[in-house]
Length: 248
Image (cartoon, rainbow, N blue to C red; front, side):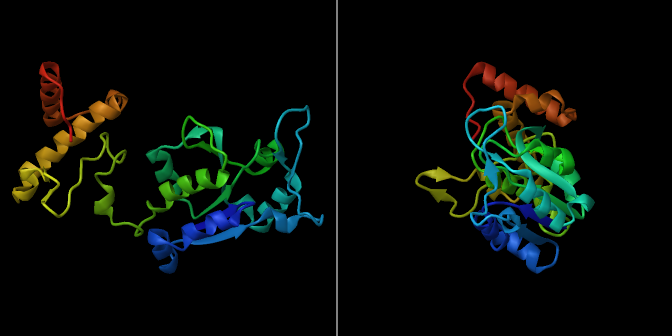
């Protein structure tokens, strides 16, 4: 996949592509990227990319001219163009899976009071919201989307690592433990040390259901639990009805 990022602050984006799993994806050729600064397409000596909004109001709005030129420079007409915006469609795991199938994605990083609507009208195919809140950096929001997407590209992360993650299936992920077996009086659950794979599977399923019921019960509204999961859910609800439940 080719990833283009249009940003006024390339120094915020560059490290993401040169570290950790993304760096390996780039070195292996599974991901390539280009970071484009709209200031390079301005004509004035101050490289101005924002101006006051028509109609009045606080803050500044990103101008269309340098962003049009920046987008044209990376052939944005031939790729899916994404703008991270609180007014966009919610980012979900299914949406990330859809985007991961694209051969090229172009991201526009907004700032200040936002970008001129004509940029959206001309280029943007997807406005995406990362959550019901507002942040000041379009770069941070864009990196959230990129991170959710690129890790799903075939070969970037082992499929076995993705299978039981939160939102991959209908339930949240189960708790994870590693060495030492005991730390500050807290022990790893004995079932994980037993080597009994079926008991471990059942324990993990119960913990997934417990965590989902506690933290994101609305996910169960659209889930279709099998007989085993339904039985465990009944047990969990019965336990909680009698006393407070510790899901750790």
